[in-house]
Image (cartoon, rainbow, N blue to C red):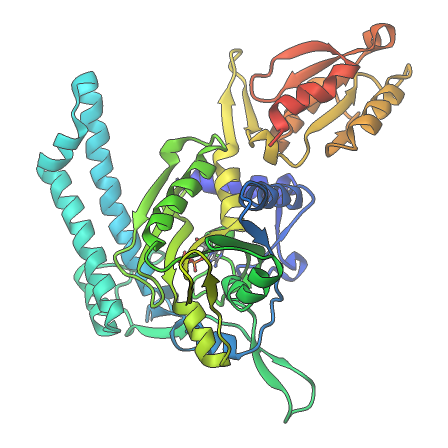
Length: 503
Ligand code: ATP
């Protein structure tokens, strides 16, 4: 809901996670900077992904290709001709929207209405409720679901046929209005290319038109044979990459959900032709498990299988996440066929084939891709982690329940008072822990307030040094989520932390 979303945005700023870019100049639309805590959370998410992809799979290696690529890359990939979104303007408000997103939002509302009916019935019937039967037979639910499906299918068909007039007709038939002003006075729908252009070289006649990459995938495809040969990789194998991508998005609302400069984490998996569906299913399942492993609640994820397929794909699904503004795409899993490698072979005149010793055949591999936005993942984790809790004594606390492994600061070390040698002991503990963890020192305010500050910051452990520490070398360790406290020896701290922070 909207309130929760506003809280997420203001909390991200207040606690040094995310700032608007060039804020002193009133910001730059849909561009954001990661602050002192944000950069750590983002790095930890990236690392969690990288470890599970690259270190956990003997047949996946990583690369880091340049953002700038030879311009023919984007001709071959289809981005010059087809990387565009259908755009529509409202004539009264002069606001610009993505026509497909307006329709998708409308369809999502129907889904929510159906869900409401289901939830109501669930409450009414309790244990004996048969959800599948209810969904199949309840008039209202059937109507909502059918309409939702029809709308999405019609839009997919129209976009496929480039029938933009029908997309506009659909918007008018559904009576979709400008979300801000309610006006229904729409322009025609037209296509808008999302790539940012730039120039290489200084002199006017030799300058070359380039694009900032709109996805990291192509850097992997053009390096396919280099990696395969030098890494002596055998099919099936994968190449993983994280890095910036740029898209001149039409509507860039929703904070870091849709940015103009963002980061992707992609893995292209090269397989034998004909085996792509097996691997597509494998990666769908594996990626969902990865998400579940973070413990944000399995009910917050769902698959959405695409009706409309991009020009390069023969199967595609999204993993959608329950963001504060509803279920939206978090990650895409695409079976890209041999489209990209074949296109690069054609445009470069170089063979990008693999000799399979098992079958004694040369072929252009098929590709299954997993592609997730790092910033979107950040938003998913951050928005679910941010919670307002009512405690037993009736007071409330704001707590950022980040998975410990992702938390920017793993522990805060707090001397109870600023004297009697306690700060020195705290410094000593930090000097031990800092080799393994990002830990901080905090001596300001009463210890209770310091705990709350660390709760809101997402720090999973607080370690308090008091006068007893001087006598027996023990400290109090306090856990963020349970707020429980325990007396342990200084020598045990690292091990205690390890229990929840290891990969
Ligand atoms: P959408 O339909 O939301 O525009 P997409 O289908 O174009 O996304 P892909 O091209 O499949 O997205 O990109 C893969 C992933 O990159 C997405 O699942 C998303 O997490 C992320 N992503 C794409 N565009 C953006 C953006 N503008 N800002 C942040 N993340 C993005």
